[in-house]
Image 1: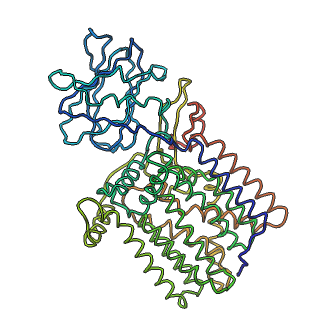
Image 2: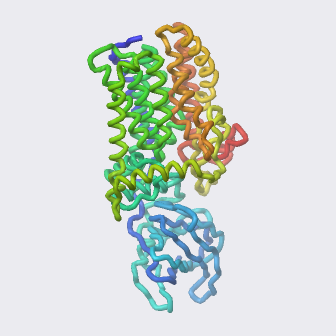
Image 3: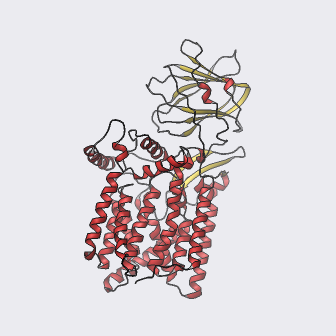
Length: 561
């Protein structure tokens, strides 16, 4: 079962090409490098901002960039001219929503020259607005300038308090606004908390350990407070998974062909791609989990050199990194220890496991240092108490969500997670992002997993030394089945750590074939995977497409996006 840890030139070139190709694809329309930076907020309990559009326009939408998550509340009025009467068009209040670095829209479909925003929020810290844009009925931006805005406070006295900042960055974002210019889905929680960690403020999102948010904060620190800044770390994490699964597959099957095949499938899996472009913790869960298993297999199948034992230590440390993002990593630790137990290498390595667990505990505790340094100060007792609050939160959560899905439905993708929907161009296109898997990989892995589970049971009964099938199906089942015991709402992204083992199951079945049949089957399957990736690319990336095209991809009743 041992392997030499060397790579042939064609393997290196292939993995480099796949990794570079993935980075290029995932970088397309990844996000804006600049967002509105000058902000305005009401300075009195009752304040009005009036926009003069210059002439009467047929209005379509009002776009509002909400820079922070504080409450923004106003009534919107319209008039056809300076002497006309004001007509109430809309009442806006985001009290029950978390909007952070987010472009919100108001649909108007009326005619007006003047727009009046009457802010009446009584809170001590009203929300900061970065920019306001107004579009025509065809969703074409109506030019605004700082000379066409005025701010009035209660009593109708002129109050020049900088409200021109609401329209001073009109060219920063082009219409239509898409996911590239705005935080969406759970990004609003993670990005907000990452920003708070950078500024040593009390973190908003505390229901998961901080490491994922700290990695996002690092991207913001390097690239700035913009979608590129908060998404680049996830893209790099996803790209790192490609050579990692290559090594894992090469290690298990002792074949560079198997490694390149598995890496090709991961490169074009939908969920892997979409999570790479989303600033949440799931992509880091996927990376650290994969590294943990990769190092565990390198320890088991290594060449027996002096550094082989180090792989077990690195496997446990990778688990610690994963656990510092989300507690569900605990399933992965059970899987790794189960593999080691079956391999009969567990007892001689107890000291390495204990050392890895100590380092993991240190990583976990260190991830709370920014929170402990936040305003007001926190100590170790506060951190310990928080762990009980976190457990209580997840154990008692009773919230519902229209796109939650039961654990048993994930492999067949009965209900993908619709994460983003935005208006399209005047030609009638839409921008949408759905989280799902590549049907060829996910559906194709089902019979493969059934087959290798049967093979794995036979390997276990035979008491031999080849547990290849068992070492694929066992982690998959241990990572997946515990969700059956969780009563809170679940989503298909909880299945992300299982994707590598779905790919390995398919690879196993391919490697059962001989000679030319194997090569033909592998090439045909990769072509199918790439073709489906190209077909679904618009709905997993947010690229604007026609409504009819989008609807044609809804193959199952609950494929809503």
